Image (cartoon, rainbow over all chains, first blue to last red; front, side, top):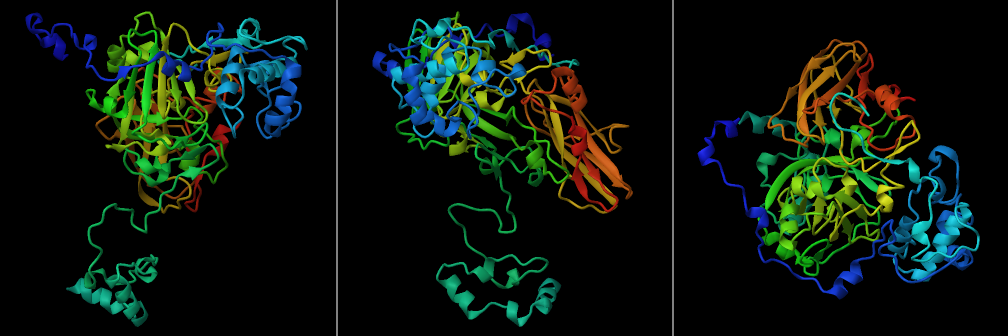
Length: 172
Length: 409
């Protein structure tokens, strides 16, 4: 309402404020960025060198994962990671994770819960392979690395859709 | 004078100050006998004894003991104990994914990189030198509904919502400072906690109203709410407002982190799973009268909170007959967008069984749905973004109980 009553001639020019910088902060070094930039995208961008298959991952699972997730990846105190029950009940990697790369990203950043960030790339690739084999998504001897992991097509992939709620009268 | 005479007349010898009390006060020690609340009577005549002097950090009256209700992963705001819209910082709800880190503000740094001209590290002092903005808005966890039994407090129904006057820097200012690539459509926000919590956020939110905040109700952030700095995405599910923010990476696609794929997504009745469901839909709850109150027939003011992540609340209706008829409640101004608003409605309870409930409408035209409407729209497996109309039933004897049967499958 206010804007409509202001003569065009006195309207504010387009703000240049967003183009302005304040000279705050300092340039980040490549080493600083690499030290923190641990994320892995679905296209594989961010995956480090390394490799592992389910046999490599089995001892890591026994040593660091099964105390919470159970020897078979289910039945522990933590949420199950193995299972292909329909409709995501209960949700597992096999029926509710749309991207295999998320496994590497999450295990590397947040697992095991009592010592996150302590697994080596080979150990993470091995555990990822162990989980994918147990969910019958990859062959028993398949090696997971920066090239193969992004190519794994997860069973739940096609289910995920963007938010379609838009407000208004319709409840979605 | 009569005030003194009256209180003195009711004061027994046992209640008078003892020599031990006086000595303890002289030594600067507050004796237990001097502070222990005595229900229904004043244990000492406050007009005959000087109170404490000014102190360095105040605390609530010993008669006032609001508490969050903590579980292993969250703590819930005692909505039933609050009367305004601002949540005291020490009662703001918490949801952690890897515990609360203790971060030295002198060592804190925020890295902004990715699709930017100038990858930059900002210290806390840097962030505080940018033009500051304050924004009062709610923050709500998307998992904010418990379907308990009749003896369920408002705190337990939906205490994972709180409101704060946040102060910080607009994220758009940081994006301008680093020279954000206009082709960047998403950014990753990452925390410095043991979960190294990450969410992908559409870049357009950065140019709308996203902030990096360092103050909570004018004070430094509480540790459980992201000290020394956190992301703030007004109106969006709380987990995306990443706490203990250490890194922002601009990109042209989402990163598909665990917290936006296998968590914080919504399985629908048609077999699809709704993803990136950021906005919190309109909601309301009556916070008084509510369990565990017992009320008497006569005048009552029905009071509660309403809010919407899509903008302002435009209307709150109250029903005192279980939804058969609705009346418009009064809204306490100012009604801010994406903010808790107080609603109030007079009610004369005549003593019979009753069921009171509230229904919020926001400026998009969205009307808070019933549980049945939500279930019909989404199926039975959705866990997040549950915002149904909730009710309190009043028994013939005045007991106020949660309307648990409204939320049955």
